[in-house]
Image 1 (tube, rainbow, N blue to C red):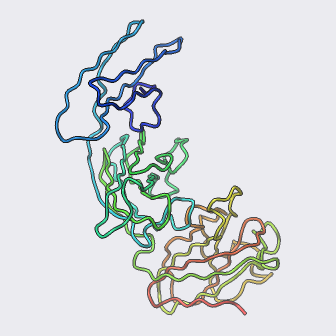
Image 2 (image 1 turned 60 degrees about the vertical axis):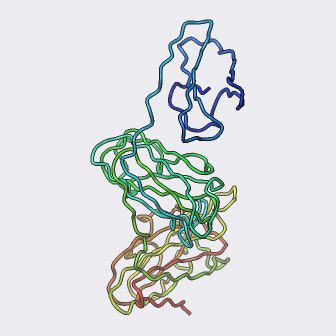
Image 3 (image 1 turned 180 degrees about the vertical axis):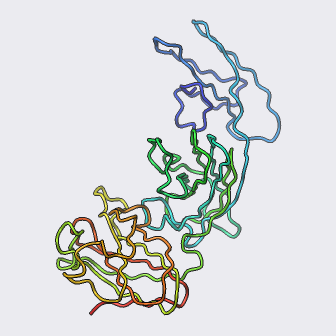
Length: 355
């Protein structure tokens, strides 16, 4: 028995529950508290194990007050269905981990306004992987372009399916305008390898490549120490932050992600807000040239200090051959490790430290 009168999907949200039994009947008896307005309940009828054969049943309801009993509309039909898998680097885990951005991504195209329902179910992988019923799953939905959120919509993006659930989950997105929407299915724990099926009740699903598809990956690690933890330009010593020299041997595409390892997973304190800035020329920023971001060619997150899932991102950008400087900063001075992940056209990028 569920409160609300709508179709129920998760058993753990029930208000009252009977006992599974092999007897010819089961009984649920309860007192419904008085209320000033009519109350709606959902009665969900289930077997302990699914069966392929038809099982007939009868339902009797008794109450001391007048009531009506009617069937609830069947689930939304599936308009689009795709399969995929978390495997290797694409098993990125939840948004608590920087590897979240490596999860498979899908595009949901809505040709008209709709209220789509997305459903994610785990399926087995040939040759091994985790048991589908044990894999904790979650879904996230957001506008394809983060800056193109629906006008006047006060919802917090991305929309999420709620707590990670074993075997499957569901996300109902009410009143979405026509457009392109990004769907990210994920497991709770990074490295959990499993197949999955993704279904949408409206629109069309299409697989998207990784954000750095076709680019070569490099990673550089370092740390903000007491001398280099200079914070944002607000703190007056911006140029003292860690800097790297990038050399592009020919025109290329470049994507950067700055992370502070260990600050997102299982910590009560908020991770530091990050920024990565790219400057023309291969010279190290000094007090004369590095007081702020105004001279930067490109800045992560549109110039805002932030730590979204995956780290502060300077999106995929075409650049001419030449030398560049990268400056890595936090909003407030922060002592701790950093990691810069660089993606560039294969064979074009060399990274060096300023001496």
